[in-house]
Structure formats: structure tokens, C-alpha cells
Image (cartoon, rainbow, N blue to C red; front, side, top):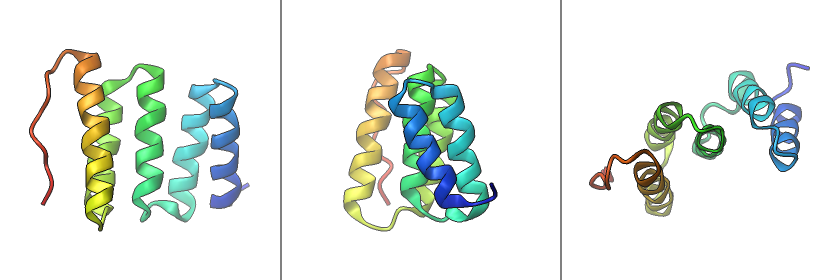
Length: 99
């Protein structure tokens, strides 16, 4: 269905089952069908990409989240994810990109 809420719920269900590839497909559909303005959707996509081992896609999703994030707490959460991704990928800890 072309429904953002249904796709969001499906992504969450697939994530809980450890089916990350399918969860990413559903999360991207949720974004495409109307949830793209919510920074949380992009954060959740980044976490899924990281779980799949795709650090570059995860960082790209973090960048998309950061553009949409509007409160300091959201930037702190994104910085924490970037630090974890950097450690996993061996990039080291990049500086905070808070505005």
C-alpha cells in the first residue's frame, strides 16, 4: 500500500524480526509516501543501514536527518550515531556538526 503509516509499521516489524533488508525497503517507502520531512524517519533509516553494515548509506541518512532536525536533542542523538558509525568503520570520531 502507498501509505506512510503502514510502511512505517512494517519497517518496525521487519526490524524486530532482524530482516533489515526488508525493513530498509519499507522505511524508504514510508519516507517516500509522506514521512520524509520527519527527521526521526531518517534516523531510523540510518540505524537500519548500520545494522545491515552499510556505513555510507547510514551516514547519508544521518545527513538527511540532520537537515530536518530542529531541536538540540535531535542533533545530540545524531552525533551519537555518527560516533558509533565512525568507530565501526574505523573513521575515528568526527567533530560534531551541530549548527
